[in-house]
Length: 474
Ligand code: SF4
Image 1 (cartoon, protein in one colour):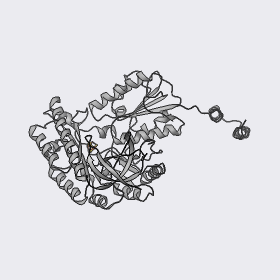
Image 2 (cartoon, helix red, strand yellow):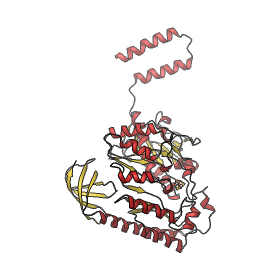
Image 3 (cartoon, protein in one colour):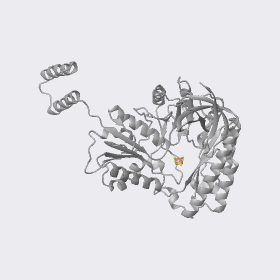
Image 4 (cartoon, protein in one colour):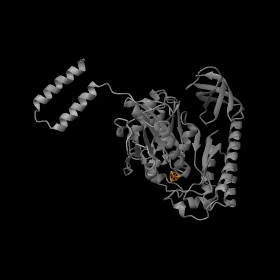
């Protein structure tokens, strides 16, 4: 018997002598604790799959860390596992279908694994998920970060447990730190939910109202992520420009992060145009650490469509704001989201969007065909657009995005840039990103992972990679 077991038995003896009337339940609890102490905790394996946005990726990493802390071994998705957690998305019908398909795939591949489905689709589509035989746990938005707490021993259940509590509206903390073992960049969740109620969007229902993470809790996780070796953090949330905690804004988060030693880059993920302050733009123009990169959803280049979407700006306001950013921040990378086929988007409205995207100094855009979501206001808007038209328009804009990206990359040729190297993309080549989000490849046999290198950009490959020559390492 080892030293700690002796101490435990002595404590037990004294405790039960002193309190002979202790209830049965408490004794059982003590017995349980005793067993836990004496037994070597079994190690289970857990794997994860993330569907959807960057915020979901951030949350999966935080959830994965909670399993790690419970002595699980984290394995790659697709490897034999005891628990498989699927963090879902419900932003389109296709996202729902993909989620159901993935669940079936997991059940087929690992029939004995405990399957937990969490996140947005678990929140909105729990009934549809319940009908898929073999799921053990369905956890909605409010409690998904605590999914590990609901699994004592990962054994298959005859019926799924469903946890779908009311989504809170108050600030939050997260008692974990993102687990990004194989990534150089780490996401940092700062905010959740949205109050804007755009007519096409299901997110305010799936994720609830806007709420902010406690400022000090963001700082705590950021310090831990940097201690784990991450040199770049990406601020993530649903509508991060609405961050507000005890008078602090997203700019205050940036300034606080800039004081962390070892953190070299801070990147802002998608941010709504009406929430970006002039101070944030000016800070980006001067900051050594805040990356020159904004991803600002446009959605449509036509005023009538924007009004039907209930976006909070018109085309002229968006253009003025974007041009102001482009003028103040040299070489800034500007990206956007655009939706095609929203009800009422005829040929003329689409042409307006196409023309605007051509004119504005975007480096790239993500194109989403409109997908009707039950419960959203857009369901009631008439003048639906045919599926084949949405496909055609998507293709046209995706081609334009590729052209814009090539043009943006061409403007960077000849410059010396600082690249944070990420991974070997093929033997003899390493790739990473500049602060203005140019993907750079360099020929080298060295392992440059997570290193900064100075590179001169020489040409653009067919795969839209800026090819460079290393000038210096830091
Ligand atoms: S701003 Fe609009 S599109 Fe974005 S999450 Fe909120 S409601 Fe959805």
